Length: 503
Image: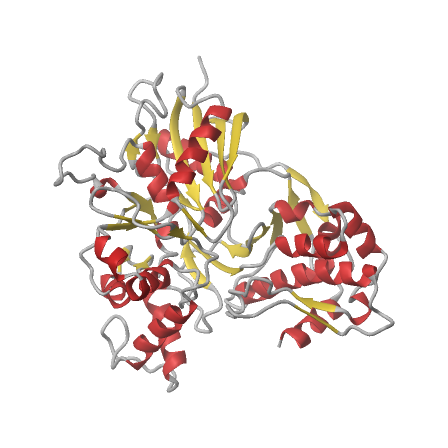
């Protein structure tokens, strides 16, 4: 009997990856990858071209029975009624909408009632009350990353573009729609021709990052959407359950050789897909060091952090995934390498010549502003430098410790919601650093499990595809390959020093 193949697609900030996978074992069969343009905004058509290139690199998808797409969260894709992209998508790391986030918080804070129309007894401070009302409504307060702030920015700054918008979706929604054979109408189509915007679909995990979807009731909050965009006559993607089928792939794209074609699973946000790929359960926290840094924990109940520091997203299994995210992730180490003119290995070697705390030198690594804490206009700063301690070794150590301490901030915020952290899983490109591996257990204050380096968003997407294809109640029990467990003596003084300067 021939094996059944599924595919996981990861359309991340930097590239699209296609992982063709054995549906029964989860083993890699073929793989392809193609880069995306740099920047904080992007023409979605570049993602389509990258997908096609990655698909071809992976040997095509003609023999694939199911696929799912995991995508960068929050990216705003605007479509007109012909299905054409109205403007470049604003990505999660585009902070131009920070003032719009504050404006929407203030508007909800001064309202006479809470977002659901009920009375509340929250703070007397209007701004704090607004943040808490957003948390109650959608699980998260507003920061520039969330989609709702970006549509508010377009409404305020590009009224002509806003007037053309007929549908709004997210990167993974749009790519799934294209794979299903949908897209803009032909250039020579009749003037009244329209695209099938009703065919757009998404899942709870990605929808929960928009700022206008309540994952506890599984419903869009169109009152909040209208508050931001000024109107609500816009098509939003259908929100599917974890095991629903969204569509069947166009045979020219996938499933040509499969009876009935290749089904397209709901897909999901990249963090939720990584959680699924890691087989995470309650008590597990993943710390992902990619372009961003993310600490995420699986929860059986919704998370409502009234300090507005932790976002209460949904996961891909019907549960929730409270997480704290930094804009600055592994690029902190890249900045250290560039400043010192060294390679990754040389940066680690230099850091090893220093001591915990870098003899008092501390980096607060907010190079691109920051989301956690919410400081969109901040810049990075080096503190505690003297003529004696200003050495390459101490600066290298400060960069690595700054990266890890910013993730310790996220870990503590998740723990503060009552999550009993039993295991930390360290993943992402930044986890390959010898220096990160050496200092993580000490700064986090506990042992750290190091899953084998792999593409966990793509694995999670493939696992979801296999789950939907199987019709079973639970996802397939694919094994997690682990390189080992990192141990080390706790170094609480490093985080304490960082916290003093961070303020």
